Image (spheres, rainbow, N blue to C red):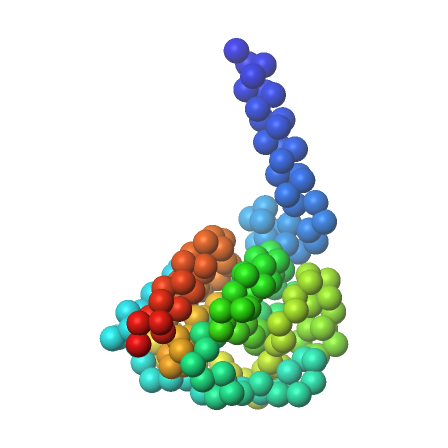
Length: 199
């Protein structure tokens, strides 16, 4: 009876190896639970009902790719704002999922933008190239203006943090830490898009 168990274990190991092949060392260290002096959020999810959401958040700044981003330019759109930096292991782990979701929703009036809290533009661009991230990032390292704009009840108090803003610019959801279940973000986007269609 041990042979099927061993075979199943081997198959699982091969699947996991296949899933993680190509991943980088920092992401692997984080996945293995070694910590490496890194403290992240616990993945806690905060969902805010429409009637309980705070005032719209207005933010913007210089982009890694040049030019600027202003949230006011996307009034009526759903915004996904991801706070990250290149040396953050869970940021590296979740980047492909965020990119995939951004592509899925790009024709549904959903806009993704990163907020890099630590790096300079060349490092941010190298990260985007390595992980295939096509949406831009605001470079927030010098002023911290974007983090300040979101301070309060749903502040980005961990790295990574992912926020979903409704069409009015109000925070509807916060994921504090790694986006471990991409389906949760997809579900929230569907809910917020439905809210917009009902107005």
